[in-house]
Structures are given as C-alpha cells and as structure tokens.
Amino acid sequence: MRENFSRKREAILRVVESTKCHPSAEWVYERIRKEHPDVSLATVYRNLKRFCEKGCVRSIGVVNGQERFDADTSPHSHFICRSCGAVLDIPETPFTPEALGEIGARHGLRVERSDVRFAGLCGKCAAKVQNKS
Ligand SMILES: [Zn+2]
Ligand SMILES: [Zn+2]
Image 1 (cartoon, rainbow, N blue to C red):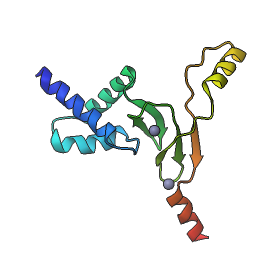
Image 2: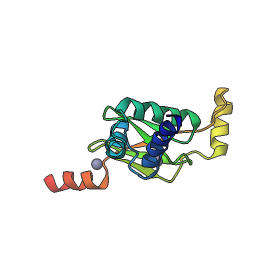
Image 3: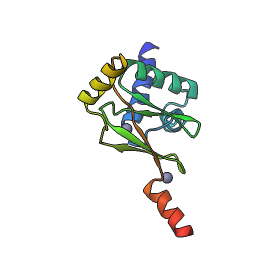
C-alpha cells in the first residue's frame, strides 16, 4: 500500500521532470492517468504542492487560471505568452546576488531570490498577429 503510494508520487515527479512546458496539474494528470488510472486530479495537485514545499519543484504562479509548475529549480526567469499561455525559460536573471543584497539592505529585508516574469507574445502568437494585419 505504502509502496504503491510512493510509486505514484514518483511517477508524478517524473512527468513534471520530463517536460519543459511548465505543466499545470491538469496536464500532469492527463499523462499520469494512462499508467495510473486510479490517481485523481486532486492527488496530482496535492503532490505537486508537496514537491514545492520540499523544493524539488517550483510554482510559476497562475497562468490563464491554472497554476503552473517547473521541475527546474535553478535560477532562471520566465516569459509568459498572454495569448496562448506558453511559459518559456529565460536563462537571464536580471538581479545578481549582489543586487538582491543591496535591495534587501535598502528596505531592511533579507532577499533570498527573485522570480521575474516577462510578459508579451511568444514567437508563434506574434507571427499570427503579424499575418492578420
Ligand atoms: Zn503564444
Ligand atoms: Zn522554468
């Protein structure tokens, strides 16, 4: 029973780690239920939140009404397409650790990290807009 439980948890983590699309719980659930038909969407979501607490997955925040997750916890920024909701990795982090330290000192805070979200249109959506006009 216990083993079965952790095997499902591992399968959920593997699905998140296998993609760069920054999936929602629904996206993970669609893939997991082919192999594990008894896993519910609520279980997938609960496990994703637990991975976030443990630090092996991070939450990107809500995009088009769905929370999105990332198994890449290394420092990087995200670009979010306002049209299709694509979440893309941007390797640049606008703030160096020194800059974070300065900002923290200026405001009397201990800044540990910064999550920067760039917004606009992805390449595909920008091309669509251009073709229309
Ligand atoms: Zn797009
Ligand atoms: Zn990412």
